[in-house]
Amino acid sequence: MANTATHTVEQTLSIIKPDAVGQNQIGNIIEYFEREGLCIAAAKMLHLSETQAKAFYAVHKDRPFYKELVEFMMSGPVLVMVLEGEDAIARNRQIMGATDPSKADAGTIRGDFATSIDRNAIHGSDSAKTAKEEIAFFFQPNEIFTRQ
Ligand code: GDP
Image 1 (tube, helix red, strand yellow):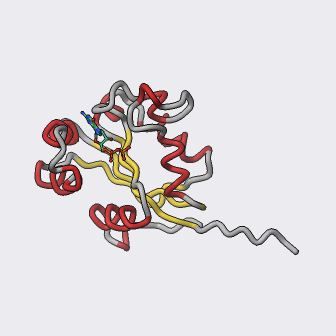
Image 2 (image 1 turned 135 degrees about the horizontal axis):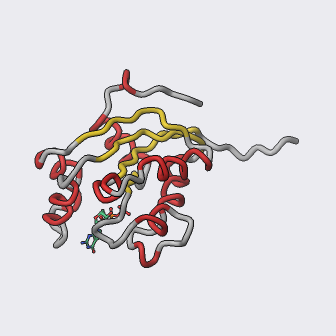
């Protein structure tokens, strides 16, 4: 009998943060996704307003780093993307590496591009629920081009 292991095609939200955009690393970072078989299903460059940055990270509003995080995310343009592929949510987190770049493996985006926990190059949704909510935060359905 054929292997019945199922892999679900998923979509997840990715943001190349202001530090990596400012260092001219957009193309280099996208390459990490594409060479692992994740497709760019949507992309837009934005400069987040305070309202957007606060709302996007509202889950962290009581954390001591919230103000700093919001200010950093507003400090320059970001590239917001929908990534699509098999098990895209978990695979994207593996490709990104650990939140703290000092703990991220070499060869992950954070291991290779991030300079500190508060300037860590990339955001990625951490569950199916947050992926759905975060994609809807930035994109209308007709702005997403399903690839798989
Ligand atoms: P992520 O899902 O790996 O991005 O991590 P979290 O959802 O836990 O945190 C969101 C973002 O908040 C991280 O990417 C960091 O930029 C920032 N952050 C998390 N923990 C800390 C911290 O202890 N100090 C500071 N300054 N920033 C943090």
